[in-house]
Length: 160
Image 1 (tube, helix red, strand yellow):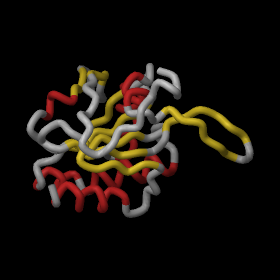
Image 2 (cartoon, one colour):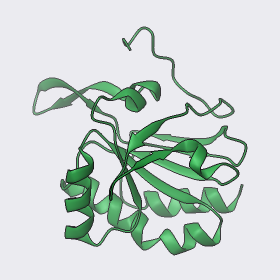
Image 3 (tube, helix red, strand yellow):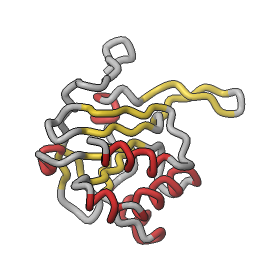
Image 4 (tube, helix red, strand yellow):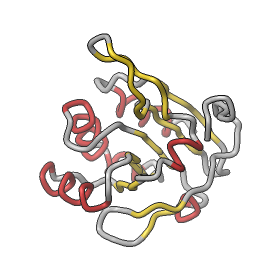
């Protein structure tokens, strides 16, 4: 998908369906969670500082998300094997999906131009989509700052 073809998803839009390889083997589909709120968060890469902190924060709050009836799924372009190592190393309890071909990342319009140390490159924008029980997007956080983010998402889930 090209940048011009991608459209930004907004609150009220139907969440794009997907099926991706997952940690632990098998696949994960959005329809696996029909009727439940889904926190679908996208992150650039396993085992980097911000991504690790975000995954740990969501894992620590997983019981609270569960009490609210929600599931948390992290998506990155890393392989399922790399996700397994990431989960083991950091004691993560959330679901991780491997989007190595970036099909879902593209569907959510998150493959973007980024800047670091004065150089431009393409990468995954850190973003979170809260998908309601009806399969529609209930909230969107783009260009996420990790600190306090998981707590803010949990509050939004509780308000559904």
